[in-house]
Every structure is written in C-alpha cells, then in structure tokens.
Length: 211
Length: 211
DNA sequence: GCTTGAATGGACTATTTAGACCAAACTTAG
DNA sequence: CTAAGTTTGGTCTAAATAGTCCATTCAAGC
Image (cartoon, rainbow over all chains, first blue to last red; front, side, top):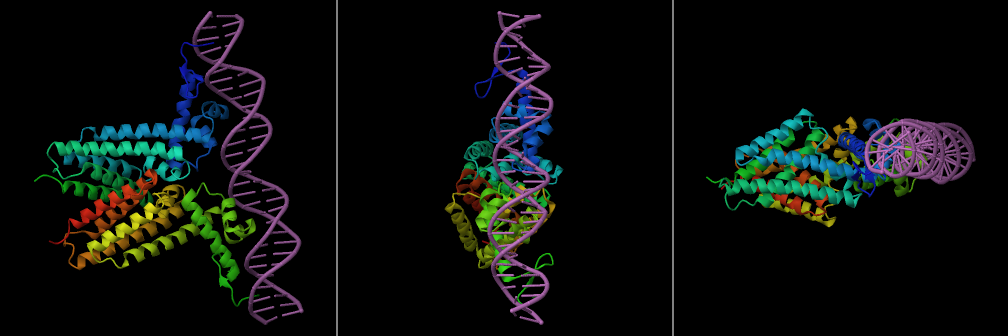
C-alpha cells in the first residue's frame, strides 16, 4: 500500500499528486467553460476535451456532473473573492473607491461586457434548481458583500464618511449596482451601463462625505 | 384553398384560429418553464407535457428549439414591458416612485426572491450564445430603461427634480439596481437585498429633489 | 523488482433529447 | 358535399450526452 506522497481525497479515497493535478485541470477547464457558455450548455465532453482527459478520469474524480459543478463553484468562489479582496484591500478613501470602480469597468470593457459575473451568472442559472449550489454561491456572494461593508466601514472610521452612513446598506446597494451593471453590460455588449451603475452607487456613498 | 378565417403565419404558412391557439399555449408553457427552470434546463418534452400538445404540433409551429426560444423572448418581453408600463404610467412624484418600489419588492417577496427577472435571467443565459436572442432582449431591456427615463423626465419637468438631474443616467442606474436586486434576491431567497438596492437608487434620485 | 492501489485510455451502454414522418381528423371556401 | 390545406396524435430515427467498465500503465513502499 503506497502511502508516502498520497493525500486524503474528498471522499475518503487517497489521491496522488498526479491525480490532484488532473483533478484541478478538470475543474479549471470546467470553470472556464461554465463562465463563457453557461453551466447547462456545457457538456462533459466539452470538459473532457478542454482538459485533455478521458471519461474515466472525469468519473474517477467526480461522482457525476453535479459534483463537478459544486467543485467549480468552490474554486470560482475562491478565485473571485481573492481577486476582489486584493482589489479592495488598499481602499481607504473615496478616491480609492473610484479607482476600484475604474478597475472593474476596465476589466469588463476588455471583453465588451460579455460573460458577466462568474458567480452571479452561475447563481442565476442554478439557484432555483439546486439548493446546494444556491447555498454555496450565497455564502460566497455574502462574503463579497461583507468585504464591501468592511471597506466602507474603514472609510467611515477614517472620518471620510459621516456617522449616519450605514455601511451595511451601502455595501448591499453597491454590490447590487455591480451585479446589475454586469447584467446590463452583458446584454448590451458594452461596459457603459456598468460604469453608470457604479457611478450612481458611488455618488450616493459620496453624499455621506463629511464636509 | 380555404381562406376566410385564416391568418398569415410567421413563416408564410397560413394559420387557423385553432392553430394559433395551440401555438400560444405552447409559447406560454415554454415561457413559464424557462422562467422557473431556465432555458437550457427545459426540454421540448417538458414543453410538450406542460402544454398538452404532441411533438408534431411543436414542430408544426416552430422550426426548432431556437425558434421557440425567440418566440418566448417575444411574448415575455411584451408581457414584462406591458406590466412595467402599467406600473410606471401613473408615477408623477417621488412618493409615486416609492410606491412603485413597494410593488416590485412585494411581488418579489411573494416568491421569496426566486426566479429573478424573466428578461434578465434569459439574457444572462443566452446573451453570449445566441446573438439574435441577445439583440431581442437588449431591445426590450432598453425599452424598459427608456420607460424609466421617461418617468424621471416627467417628474423633473413637474419641478420635483432639479435641472441637473440627468434622467438618462438615473434611469440606467435605477434599472441596474433593480436587476442587481433581482440577482441578489434570487440568490438569497429573500427580497431584502432588492429592497435595499432600490432604496439606494431612490435615495440618490431624491438627492436631486428641489428644496 | 515486486506488489499494490491510484491513474489512465478508451470503448461501450443507457438514457435523454431533438427532430422527422405519416396517416387520420378537422376546418372551411367554393 | 367536396377539395385543399391545416392540425393533430403518435411513432420512429438520429444525435447527443451521461455514465459504466476494464485492461493497462504508472508511482511508490517494501
């Protein structure tokens, strides 16, 4: 029984580094396909082809398509949250928030608004059909919301925003503007509506600025 | 050649009232299924069953699934736009806008946020896979946006909003807040985030109120 | 180098789904 | 009534898709 370099797998089975490598190649390919084609429009054969794997590898690592979907939600959540955390980390002023806005709009305009938000799109497609997916995505999106709330709290604590600014509500509103911006941008194939939506949210936040 | 009561069909073929009745039963059933399950997750057999029709009826009225999808986009667009027009028609004040907000939130809370926006959800699922669907949905969503712009213009003209309030941008922002609210509400299974998002947008609009 | 379990390649099956087809029933103009 | 086209029920085919299986290879501990 080989032990040394093995790693405990998700479902009790041991995994070797080579297996884990394959597994993550599958998940990454699936994540990309889900993002550009949608979850239901992506077949396992698409995934197999994109990841250069075989059927047996797919089913060695994932019981069925739903389990793969959950794995994708997991890595995609980690990826998006890490990216957004990185983007928000240094924001301490209203100018910082505007720069954050610019980053989002620029990234979105690079693909002409296409594909929308990876988490938002999966949520729209899966929330009402698979409760487990909904809950996982809900946890991630709420973590994202809390990141915005923390950023706004930080800005307020620094005395830039007045006491009556409510970071909870402003954070939720800001995330909604962003998500709505993604939807409209994807539909219009232009990042313009996202820019307008974020500007509105930021203008509103700025209305709480201390004079 | 029977003529009298026939009606010109979409693709040149003549249709009788009975046929048109069947056709709309198919489209209505498909629209409902697309709304609750999503487009790709709905099979033609689902549609056949829900509309109590046979395969031959489906293919008598629609060349293939894509044509059916376009037909659904068409009726769903008309339905949503008519409903929203009706909801916005009488709005002439800020209080009216708040009442409009209440209607949306209440309707959304009746289904615990589920299903989101019929047009927005289809757009997210179809925009990057079928250009024709994207364009049709884009036309409808933009008509919706213009309805909001007109409402805000009306309110401004009445002297309730100041001259520097830009109905174009405010309307886009308002629609984005609504769409983002739908996304978050569907994900959270609660209409709460939609309420917060709309409140933010309306607070912002109200900041342009004449004193 | 032998053994053992993980990993792999690929063929194979089962099921689902889209779509074609046809004969019978219906509808209506003439 | 009759003819011509429409509508319908149902069956049948083709393709796509999910999922199974097994013989072989690989990697590591002994």
